[in-house]
Image (tube, rainbow, N blue to C red):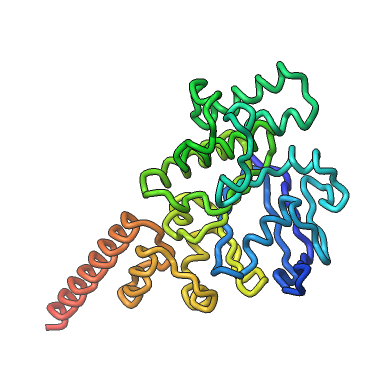
Length: 293
């Protein structure tokens, strides 16, 4: 099944008020239902790019179009229901005294009837796994993982088609990180376009179908994640380290190990294949020697 275009970034340049050039001539197209990771070292432009897509920043030059509409022409209400942005620290967007009011804040700003607001709150809460017992709790006293779910639920209540999450696994242990990423994968399965901004290459390798590498405010690489991580020389210039299995495959390249592996299982399979090929060559060479005699 083919999907339409969700995001178009055309010749995007962004300069901060202090004169810092953060993005230069960036072009990017994102289809509906994609799961994409933006990666790059600090200052590479990945967060600035995501904030331009979310309408939190407006292009200095060029254009960002969301479902065919320029962000420069879209009202705040239209942006909020098209693209949801979850900040790296959920405390930067949580400010209501109860979980219910936090999730209800967006729908109420849309001036929806209170019965529809409640419907959206319960719907979003169910999706993120927040039971009704949390609704009257203060979000400020919840563990960070739950606060992040509250933040995501507050975005989901607006029913945006695109969800951007900045550093979804920061401050989480591996188990919590997997829970969060499985949840984002679930949202992707529901039809949401997901963009994550992250430094966690293992997470990118496991979940992102496509990866965009930013360096010095420009798009350096863009493609299927396995192909992007196989570009070792370019990634080195961007100060990005591929996940460990990919680096190990690179070290074994002279033995014919495929370069675009992403997981330990793929690496093991490639090493076994390489060993079998070597054995077959030795056997063939031995047979040829015998026949020569």
